[in-house]
Image (cartoon, rainbow, N blue to C red; front, side, top):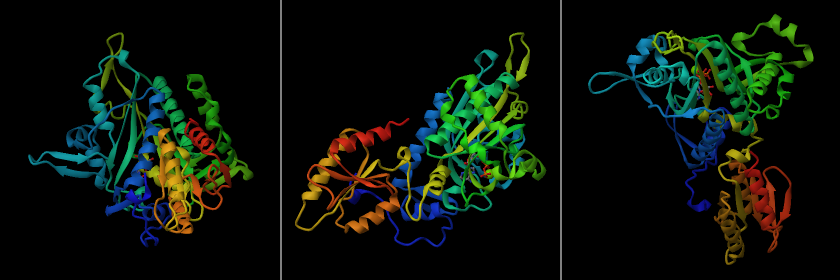
Length: 442
Ligand code: ATP
Ligand code: MG
């Protein structure tokens, strides 16, 4: 892509309404635009990053055998009346009537709908376990939408649901998801810590929130520092290995506000390992047994003909929130820093362009054409701005790699720089290999 053609409305000034860095930077870099309170349009740059995050989330769900489907955003009120949540959900639910006066709603979550799909298709224990997920827009009429896409009304979420025959099997599904979440966040360049959480209005007896540390986070957390040293990559996708990983996390104290108990904390964690700070919730998993299958009469037949209510769990990741959360975790001064896997472009070519001399532009185009042949996603700055202005702009955009065609580049060696890193003088082949390696890390 040539920068002159890219729809990217960069703002020079920080908009006054944006209180936290990620919101300011997303607006300044032209990634999103508010369309009404808590509702955003995703402009090309922001959309691209979100789609890359979505793809990583999808790949890690598929790896543990979860199957993707797609449920609609608009649901009938009927099933919510069956579960009893139509009233309980309160004002966060956006309620709508169709032209026949039928009560509908914009889904804030999908436990009811997935249970309805399941119960009308699956009748036997033989079809269990099942793990189903979709990645779809949700709507919650938040009381205080704020911090841009961090807490908004319409947001993009991956939600998965597990169906098992008993508690024991259900815990296996839960642990698989637990593992998939850790791998997902790791690939996104984040250290997300599973914290024991209150199961809240969704109910049930087992729940973890996945939290990344950030001063601007809305969750208060209390943990043992040593939990940050656990290496999820040492574990493979086998049942015993996943159980081991769960055990390692369970060893260390890590809870959110609602589960905090001062005495317990001080007893279990000695002073030098105590960490009390704030974080952003990027994912939340629950096990709730038959909380929905019972009122919705979702049963399967066992071998002996007996009927049992299926045991369910639900598992959410805030895909759109993650765009902001990654910025919040990585920015440095006013420089965004995208991890290679989710960066809007793999590399930027930044030529110094002088009037009456198009040699750098020709050089840039040659490099550009060679890189895109290898499916490297390149942004070429073909504008005639001064180099220093270009650098400022690319600091804002946070593209992780730069090829700079200025005084340090010759006809066959080019200045290659990782954002915020040292620069190197490399041939086109060396640059290409470096970029391809970074793409193939996972
Ligand atoms: P929160 O405590 O932040 O309101 P929640 O417990 O209501 O979150 P879940 O219902 O578990 O959230 O949703 C799963 C994930 O969806 C959350 O971990 C979060 O990443 C994301 N999410 C929830 N509400 C919002 C929102 N209003 N805006 C953006 N993302 C959200
Ligand atoms: Mg909420």
